[in-house]
Length: 290
Image (tube, rainbow, N blue to C red):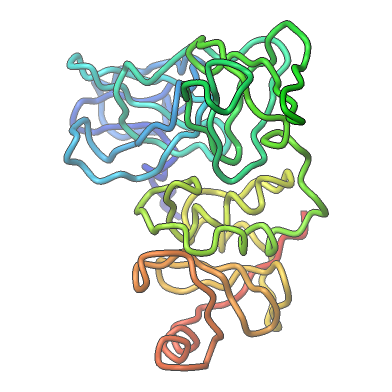
């Protein structure tokens, strides 16, 4: 059996430039490859990862603030080829968006969307945009109470000192990815997006599971391959379609980010024109069993 070529979404190799990651040494055809050892970095803010080192190239994914990345190689013109640490997804981003990995106590944002402020008061200037899954460092100092609110001192990715409201960091309730996915209702659809500022179908399912320590791959086909196949869906299962995925709310209703409505909506499989098309195109259901 001829071995399959490495998946270009997760295994770094460019036949045109002959660059490849060190772990692929001996697995690629031909000669003249330059093998690169990845270096740890982090996203200083939400970073668009693109298919090519150009601003007009398609966004393939998005790195969240403080997310661990691997820096692979540069194009010499301000673009860097990187890979996300958790789902191992590859893309090009601007060099200026990278920073050193966070050190010290790390805090993770649990709010869908939030802001960081220059001081412990809502009237202070906004100095950072946050989202579910963003990571920052706890700064020295005490929590400040102001007007019945509690503010936590932090250092944002990239080094900016800031304050965030304590509810932004509050633990999530019972581990229910379906309930969390439903909170994204009406979030705009953005191809490659991974946050409540805009996301795509697999970005929604990935975020809803990752918040509870259940880490899914990036794309719908990868998620389908990673899950256990089930025939009778229940709450929290994923429904799969060609190039699409949704989170089941029960045996028929599904919440999904879709380009038909250009936002996150709820559909009932088999009901209405769109629901009938979805039901006809469904390729199966998957369940997290790890």
